[in-house]
Every structure is written in C-alpha cells, then in structure tokens.
Length: 431
Ligand SMILES: [Zn+2]
Image 1 (cartoon, helix red, strand yellow):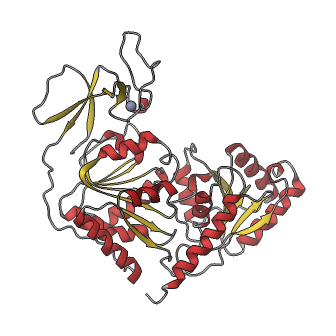
Image 2: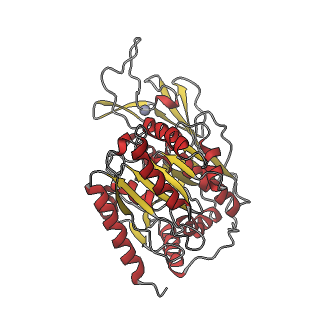
Image 3: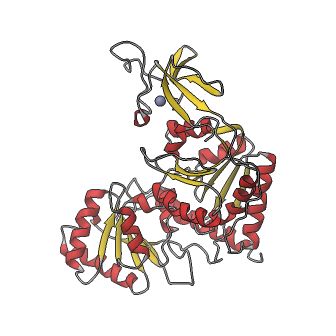
C-alpha cells in the first residue's frame, strides 16, 4: 500500500523506491519526532544516549537510532469506473451538497461539510468517494471514534462492494492492501503522504480535538496535492476559523433527511442527582421518567462518570426489575455486542458514557442526560447527544431530556443552537 511507513534501525540497506526520513530530526535546533510531531523534552533520553519520543509510544518506541521508511510502489489499482450500489435517493438539498463536494475534488479544494445530526452525511459523501475511487485515488475515511468506524464500515462495504476496503481501529490488526481505508485517526500515524483524499468525520470529538499528535498525523498522512474534507454537525470555532484562513469550501445542511426538525431538549430539574443510586425516593423520580419515555421508545441514559453509571445501573435494576437494563462505556469489552442488542430492541434502558454521543444510530430511542451540567457535557456533546433521537423512520414521539440541578452556559447554548439550526433548516423547505 502506498505511503505506509515502517520503523527501521538506521543503517539497513536502502531500497531504491523507498522514502527515508530520520525518526527524530532537529527542527530549529530542537529535537522533533517526525512520526507524531512531538517536540521531545530534555528528559526523554535513553541511558545509552539519544532521544526517544514519548508521544507515540503506542506505535513502538521511536528513537534517534530509527528512521521512517515508506514505500511508494505504483498502485495495483488503475483508474476504472467504480459504481456505488447504494440504492437510496438523495434529497434535492443533499444532492446540491454532494455535487459541491465532487467539485471540491476536481479543484483539489479542502472542504468542511457542516450538516446537522441525521442529515445523511455518509450518503452525501458517496458521489465524492465514487469519483475518487474511479480516478484510482487512495482514500481514507478517518474518525476519532471506534464506534463510528464500526458503523460506517459495513455501509461503505455495501455501497462499494468491488473496492478493496480495510477497517483498522486497533493496534496489532493485520494490514492488507486497500483502496479505501476506514480507520481511527490514531491509525493515520502509520502513513506519510499516503492519501489523495482524507475524510475526517467528527474531528471535534474526543480524542482528536485538542490532540496535536493526531492532527499532525492527519496532516502527514495526506498528500500535498490531496483533498481534505472535515465532516461534523458541531464544528469547533477553531475549525471554522481555519476554513476561513485557508479558503476551504464550507458546505452546510441544516435539515434532517426526513425533514423533521431536530428535537429540542427539555429541561428537567432533578435535585441531588449525584445521590440517585443511594436514595430510593430520589431514584423513583428518574424511574418514573424512564417509564414515561418507554411508552414510545427505548431509553438511552447518558451519565457523566463511569463509577456513577455502574452504581446507577445496579440501583435501576432493583428499582425496575421488570425492565431489561444494560450499560456501555469505552473500556467495556462487550460494547459492540450490547450496542447491537440495543438496536435489536433487546434492552429497554441502555446507560452509557459519552462514548455513544455521536455517529451511532438507533431506530427508536429517547435520550436522558443525567447531570447535564457536568463538565463532560460540553455544548457540542449535548447537541450530538440530542441528535441521537428521531433519526430514521416515521415520527416516534422521541424526546430529549436534560436532567440537571444547575443550569450551565453549555446547556443554554446547546438548546439555543438547536433552535437556530431548526430555523435555518426550515427556511428552504421547498427543496
Ligand atoms: Zn512520536
């Protein structure tokens, strides 16, 4: 595959087609890791002398004795017409965005696709990806979230059945050749000047946002002549600023695929919510709320902290023994299985950390955010979480409820922004 870089000890024989760079090089007199961009602090020195990089240890330790070796063999796949077999139909608004995206590819212009949750972002990318693949280009769809990778991979596989597609989101998995890579943004650090097209989905999500290693990795992975597309429902101020500075094309779509507005969160004052797991009477209030929502939909219950989530799960199981209740969080080994079971309607209530804040679709859920004022629930998180409801099918009376005991700026802003997006999305309903 083109542009995948390997670590080698300096001194090995150089292949003629290879591209070699020092693993740690001096930039303006300071040592800098060429794989992850970390400026090496003085205390990161080996006993035998020489620096090592603390920023990318998860890929194997890189030292001054190493170099990064890339191969740029000609691609096995030559340009040939690729057909997208997705059988759905884009709405008129989606089609406009899709056409603009393909124009960006033609002009090699970077773009931001800013589209609300449930607007069909992936489908809008299909024509763009089809064109890139048809030109024999190497394409990467990267996202910070493993769950988003897992959700998108089968959809791309179905749409581009004849293309070699590889899914990579953990260390140690096998590499094989591909034309389209679906990967976490961590995996981009394996590449140097590799992709003609790099789509970064949900770049404002943890852990990508604010991590200079991951943004360095994405810059390095894209060819200098490549086309970069960021896709999100909640672009950060920094990203919008970058678009302006670097003359990116900003494409917006503030209407959901089914044309219903985003569900506006309701506020629910729940005093002493941190004590719910211990206080039966307080828990009853939440249990009643769950039962009310369960009349129409399953319930996704977002909790701010994992220990709290586990305590609350235990308490709810005692309080509501007739219901099927489960929980998921990032380190949960059975996460994929549990998400699948939720999709199949096998859980009534799924307690979750912010790991499910974005990129995942359930057919029929309402959302409760417990402790909406907690610092993990930033404005973008609250908007994404609210975007989990009413995504597909007919209207199901889905609701979003922020349970809180203290109002925050983020909560107010999230509700305000959802209202504004609904106004914007409703303006051109004629299309
Ligand atoms: Zn490094």
